[in-house]
Length: 536
Image (cartoon, rainbow, N blue to C red; front, side):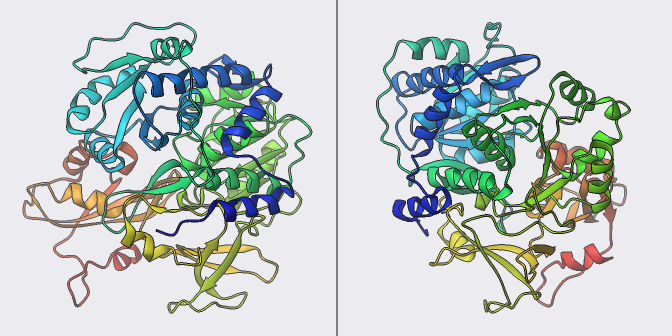
């Protein structure tokens, strides 16, 4: 595994700030105390201040260490939507020296068992509505303690539902216990792992990008300094992107908090009525989203009744923004969409269109402190204007993939260059255009979907002989999954296969289209050619 030294991270951060930069937890405490009386997060009409986040997260950290016996480096899975409890438990886990394992609340039993076991999670915090699923999952994993919370627990604690889980505690009870405990110094450095952010790979099962405190801190600073926003005025951001996704995690949980802003958390961005209502209830200065979200919002009948007069900037990432959508957004809100680019492996941060100079159709120039190059198939650097694979180097680039040395070596060399798998053009002035992806990954509403994982599930159907999943353009979600199937049962239907997939895949991974074939195109060594299927 390529490991950046703390000296390298510190040197990079000094170049960014031109001053000594504290570690992530020190920065958290500094912002918490500087803005103690200000609102930090707001959700469903309720809010918590910076002082409350600091106090409650300390109590949670003390509970994890003192009552659960967790030690520095242990993993804790956070399986929550965007609610007020998320920043409390995430910052608490980080203060305790634990590693956050971001986990999608929509995951199925199979997906949860895989991720809990792969990460080696010792604890999990979930919504109480997820407890029936956890009863099936926990016995097959190493999770020793489950902390449960209801959406309104912070305002009105709810009794625990009946469950067969042996070690279960409510979040309010955990906070109460931690309040009476000391929190020992965990001696956290920038080298220490902060986050396991799961992404995909050629094996068909997700793998985790190992992000250190230094990686996350760098990403937050780079984003702020590179974009060029005037932070003398307090930022109030609408936060529809899930905090369990690297985009929302860095933009709202880390960067927004360290900058002293207010993040309005949206538990379910697909609920257009609730999102519009939240936007009407709180004047906001920034908005972070993806192309599909902009599209669906502008189709809402009440969109034009939202007050956009305070909106200073809109950030887009996660998936390519269609120029026509960006133009329509600017026309109707008065705010330009500034597209950026990043991956889980770069803590979501690599390039961004700056506030002063945006170029539609590009992902902007590299962020401050970031190096980019494009290379040919032999790894030779290409001149400006050439198409090649995009490589990234900087203090935000991951340490490697969790417990996967070979996979790490495939994408990260000894000099710290990360291979993105994306084909790009770097223009003479440094602006970058993404041409296509080398990877077969499908982006559904900004979420990574991996064909091998889908195929592995479909192959377990008794009537399936062969299958291949590819991404196809979709007007609503940007891309959708199309499944090609060779079946031994002529009566098998696409809907039957979709129902089968729903048992083992989150809803956004389930194929939208199913096409039956007599055979699938293959190479001379028998490999199914997904590229040909995409082009047909």
